[in-house]
Image (tube, rainbow over all chains, first blue to last red; front, side, top):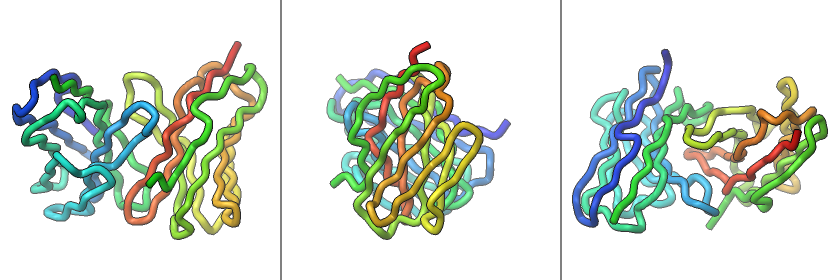
Length: 112
Length: 109
C-alpha cells in the first residue's frame, strides 16, 4: 500500500530534550516536506526537500532541522524543543513539487 | 505574511444544497492550486486541483474555479452531503506549497 508513515503518532516531552520524528514514504517520491498545523494558522511549511541531500527552509524553520540521506526518509529533528513547538506535525511527499502531496497521519507533540 | 488566505473559518450548509468555499492569494506567480480535505485525527487528503492556465476544473460533485485577475479561488460542492463535513484547505504552489488557514464545513442533515 502506497503511504507516508510517521512515528511516533503522539509524543509528550520536556523543554530541551532532543527528539526526532521520523517520516518514511514508499512511493519513490522526489519531494518531501514537513508542516505544522496550529489553530487559526493552518498548515505552515517547516522544511522541504526536492531530492536526496537537497533541503530548503519553508516558512517556519526556526528550531527545526531535517536531513535527507535517503529518498524514502525525511526525519524532523528538534534539537532543543520549546513549548511553542507544541503542535500537530505532518509529513508529506509528492513525485515532484508541482504535483499533489500525500500526507502522513500526523504527529501530535506536546512540549512541557 | 500569509500568501494564501481563507477568510471564513467556518461554514454551515444544509444537505443537498451548494457549499462554496473561498480562497484568496497574493502572489500572481503561483502556477498551480489545490484543495485538500481534512478529517480529525487524519492527514489532509487531496481533493481537486487546477492549473493557472485554466479557469475551471470539475470532478464529480466538486468544481474549482480560478479567477486570476481577482486572485481568487473557490470550491463548489453540489450537492453537499454530511460526509463532506471536514476542514478544507486551499493551497498554491510556486517552488513550495503555501496553504490557507482552512475552512471548517458542516453539512447539516
